[in-house]
Amino acid sequence: GQNIDQPTEMTATEGAIVQINCTYQTSGFNGLFWYQQHAGEAPTFLSYNVLDGLEEKGRFSSFLSRSKGYSYLLLKELQMKDSASYLCAVRDSNYQLIWGAGTKLIIKP
Amino acid sequence: DTGVSQDPRHKITKRGQNVTFRCDPISEHNRLYWYRQTLGQGPEFLTYFQNEAQLEKSRLLSDRFSAERPKGSFSTLEIQRTEQGDSAMYLCASSLTSSGHGTDTQYFGPGTRLTVL
Image (cartoon, each protein chain N blue to C red):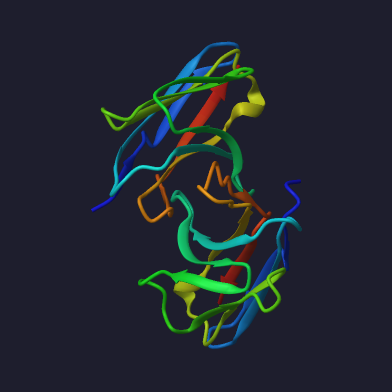
């Protein structure tokens, strides 16, 4: 079966750094996406990785290791507005997105 | 605002009634997706269209659910004889796919929250 694993919840302090991990087992791999979702709102696109390595976008970076079936999202200089759920999704061999359940990130002052 | 709109934003209905939701994708996007999401879960794939053709439908999807995209632009999702278990957020997303697929990033609308009493 296909599976995406993420921690259910994480807590971090404003101004700090947090790393949200995602491991996956899918039938094929055609890219990995990270989305941010605030409560009651739709997911918004953060990053896309298809090759191994680190992609940096401002305060957010995403890393991929295809051989390990592993990705992480790194958030730096945390702000209160970063409190949200972070969803990892993998595009499989059928080009369908397989979604994790999301990691709820709580930022404390 | 991603440019994807959905209507209505909220719908409360009684069990057994039919409901219809509309999605207007980003205008140049050729793919349109419908998802369902419940609290604490990721989006669950329902179906998707490339232009006006419905290319895939989830095997888990009841035959009470039907979707159309008649002119390859907006889409509608209809749920017949609603059940309390249908209560969820219904999300629409669109993407632009080209030969070789490329990034094909999906951009989501604000969703329609359905409550079945």
